[in-house]
Image (cartoon, rainbow, N blue to C red):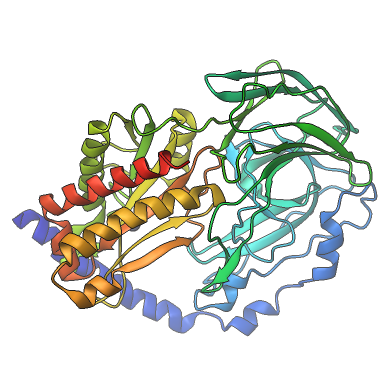
Length: 485
Ligand SMILES: [Zn+2]
């Protein structure tokens, strides 16, 4: 304990000196206007660059300014110069196991639920480049605009030989069957064309400048669209699927896309998909089943932060969020196992993993639900409360169920005799693009159990009895979600 306090004091000293360095740097940062004049932003050119076209002569490589530059986190460095791409059609291949994509029209790197992750081996051709300042990482990010209308990080792809030139694709269903409830569709394409996944029937609303909040998950159809594709055939056998009631192809000749549309048996009755490239060149698309209930469910818990990343600090550095998160996850594990669930962890020790590594662990383990457990932090040390976050619409019902149960613990036990806090402790189940909530393979949420930066709320989280209550609530919330009609 004394050692922890010493480390805490050390951390405060380090933080203070870092803060003074930051102040000095801030003073010598270039003014925003100086930075802007070094760019040439042409929105109109960008629009035309994102549509697939045979004419490569009009390709331009304008830089883009992300919205992020407009806020206080202005870049501290000049952007590096970009190598021009060769003339002619330049193909590239995804080399990351799973590559995030952004809308090609977006002026920044903000995620929307329409962004589909591309699996390794996916090929597309480049129609332009853009550069965005990432305020969180304090780095410039380079993107390629792809013919399929989205952006991808340049370090997620490899440029293919200049001689490579793929033609129009034809997609065929090789086989389809329902295996242990999951609908597995094996597809063969002439080449590894890009694809997108979309819902229909979902409404969104805007709150606090974030545009993809939902009141309820109301999707009634799911759709996979394959680009550079002019023909599609083969029926999908959906007879034994409890998720989809039909599957049909439509080909859009003008846009060279083929879509596989699958109406859902039940509105909002959808639990994720996986996409896998096989050694024989085929692609397996799996529409996941509805888990039967909490008993037998596979739950992945992600104790936030760890190792060199302590997360937020409580009591002036004496309490590490990473350790509170882990203790809360252990409490949730015990409560889940009592209910018959199988529990998987992203980390079982005080070690550091990147957010991408945590997501890839989930993709490998293929759980039914993924819950990232965190404590909140605010500059205002009096701020208190609990909240949950979803990104994909399919995750909203899970966020809502877990949030309601954790909120009840605060209202009925922790703040039972404090009518002021009881009334204000609920910060809601909200949309936010946290990295770990962006999984498409299963509903994934992040919960902020309480504020470690608030001494009183931190003290509540340090009590094993209270952590047991919160762990129990997390398990009950997951059980509620899995037992929905
Ligand atoms: Zn955290």
